[in-house]
Length: 288
Image 1: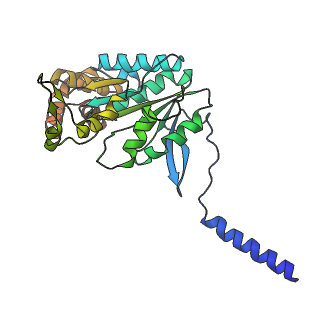
Image 2: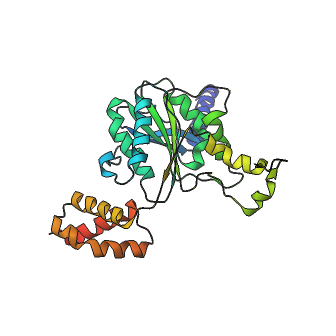
């Protein structure tokens, strides 16, 4: 073997070792494979992962959130039709249908080109890359951030502010951001924040810089939609809907009411999520 052959062999071996250390490359997403995608990071590189078994929930499955459903459905319809629409922040009581409403809108409008990209809070710094990736596509994309809240100093907070309304680049007209949270201002509020308020000679209160910073992110969402705890009768009606969905007949549904109330009491919540969980348990135990 000549010196040249030895050199080439060593070079090939070295390249093979380097390739093993490099982050894996991912092919472009197959947009026909799914309507929903997740942003995933591998070796420091992000890619879109198709969700081949997405939630099948429909708008008709969601009860006692009529005004909220109407607002989100209308905003999403405007978006898929190419009309002006707003980024949306859905806030309020847990388990009342915030995330389910977004998934139901995907099922409602997917045939019209709507697509969903779920992004974890820890990956919000990649929002600019995600928007750039889909900017030239004909579909309409909702970037979905679930259960969003921040502690002070988290990098994703600034990245989301810029993506919503703070970059020198205009937001792509085929992308909206829908986020859910249990608190409207997305940042923890402390008693010490009240000390930063000031008042003028007319007695008008003015928030200080700390308070302004904490509410500035929420204000960048064009549409705020609030959700509230369900009353007992509302909760029982939702239980009845899901029991019927799981195949229970009317006599079983009537008989389940006391158990449904005890189930909610144990959970400390009369929410749609608790109703769905009870219905799954009850139907599973009582089906022949």
